[in-house]
Image (cartoon, rainbow, N blue to C red; front, side):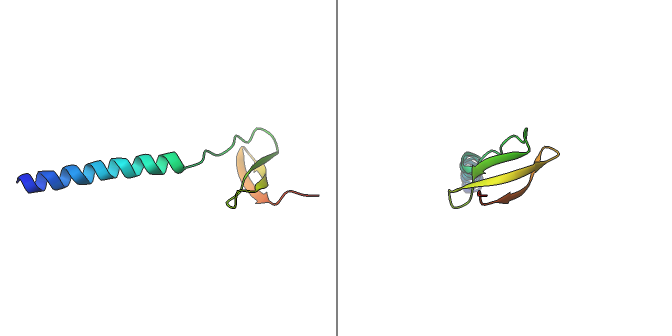
Length: 64
């Protein structure tokens, strides 16, 4: 019975740590107050995103 309790406690602690790590790494989405917002893309370079009804709809490389 002690072994089962120890395993359950370990699994609970690991689940909490994993949730904290995931929540820490998640980047918040920008507010779509204007029509176009500039955010960091997956490669770390800026990308322009078009907002439609308050949500991001399309992102593309910035430029003319």
